[in-house]
Length: 422
Image 1: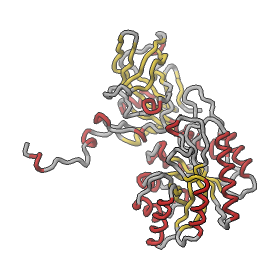
Image 2 (image 1 turned 60 degrees about the vertical axis):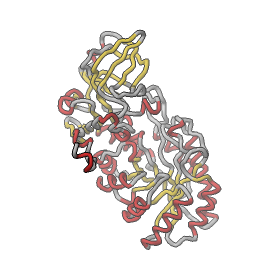
Image 3 (image 1 turned 90 degrees about the vertical axis):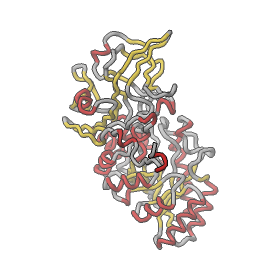
């Protein structure tokens, strides 16, 4: 459930007409619903109330510090994959002991920053990284809490670009190698093996892959215990899917029930890294129809938003529902269209061969399910300015990121002296 609905044929975000926000911000613009964020967090967190757990929101889904502040306000932590995300999480006052650091390519500076911040743990993704962390811990004279990200070799049955738990993926360490590394860690003075980590993919719509992963990690915890290593944390990652079109993902209650059944009486504290499931349907991208272009056998809705604003359709062929902000604009029937943007790429589209309401130039369109991997994956391609972000709470709305200026586009750039004479 989200809090975007029509009232008298006008799309509202909570108690604010979307068109009112657009009058202030212009288009394109991302709009997020606070009530939706709150509801999704509480439903997810409450599902695990019988299990010792920490919800570490996956910052990569949407890293605006206001969104991070919302998650922290409800008691959440953060799953980070860069020093920039660490910086954002700390700026949002997320407690360091609720931050976990994942990712295959952590640099020395990133590892040092994470250790200095005293985060909960660093998830190790390779033998080389293990030795890097051990060396840094030794130099800093700090014992570093770590887990190894195990690749359980499970097919999550999702898009290949967002699968992370197979042998062919770059993430994690296979079971046998992970056990060897835990033995090595056991003898290291400045590493403390406190957990086991895993993440099998994103937008997963079935429970069976999660069950397989938990069983695999539970067996590893038992094997480690036999070696004299008693881990406290089981980091299960994220990946629970949402509804974009007609998908029927498991409810968090169902997810929690099967996880709880597998981990009953183990005494393990689980780390959960939800991202999309918390923020995906909390946001829309609003764009304005610039032109209706008709070619032989084809109709294009050309809008002012583009693939640099929301790349998921171009990158994954992802589906996003697109609806008119004013319903009256859709009462003249339907037409099959491609919804495309102004960027100079044939892949710049939001929908292809989509049955859409007949609307005229100037109409506002809302692209739903854009709260996750929307703004966070946006870019300045074609020297387009990144768009504003707005958070709505009840009858109020707040610009939580301003639209970039043209000066922002060239910030940090410089012209060498030998070119200045021209």
